[in-house]
Image (cartoon, rainbow over all chains, first blue to last red):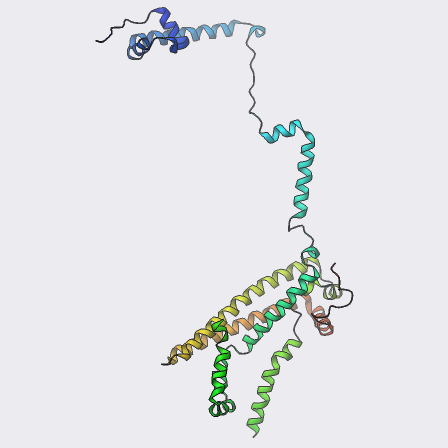
Length: 175
Length: 148
């Protein structure tokens, strides 16, 4: 059985404007479905709004509600700075310290200590020796020796020499 | 007879060449950070930075080329070690190896040239003199035994 609900009376309309959650569920459903009641509710809201506007315009400055400017809440960092100004000095000091310790500002003689330079020199000397050997002759030794007339004779006489050469040349390949 | 003598001389020269050329070279590593070299040559901080950049760039390029030469040499060895020799492939690989070797030598040489440019003729000659008199890596020059 469907319950027949009549339109909202003035009291119920006022309650709907102030706080609709106070209304009975069936009345709220009726207000949602009934265009006549919704129109009445909107008209009441409009009248109240106009009334508020008129009262604000006609009241003197002293009796007006003071306006509070809401500032954007400050972040934790700003709040800490406000509470502890010493912290500000600390931040500046730490920034300078970080800047001083960066590689850009590290002293050259601190990076390149003599021990380090000498160690690198030894490594570089060995590296350049290898480079020079490759510059002199990068080709497989056995075949280059075989190409030389004097060496060819020696290799013909002692085939073992060829094998020795092969072993030497194939060293890096097996490395 | 003459041919044989000349060939022997050429072989001796070839064997000695790396040692001879090495005697005229500049010191290895970052010598500009060693007071023995830096002080008499008046190497400025800016020049030290330039030498550092040059050294880093050159050595990394040399390392790349060294690896290429070694790889190409191994490839050539593999080719000529095959039972059925592919002569064309071997010759192509030999030419590739030779061009990489030339590039390696040129990169090495360009480092010396850049150092020569940065120092100028007088200081470059002075560097070579200092290097010849240098006790070497095993013996540190007097006064440089401790870290700065």
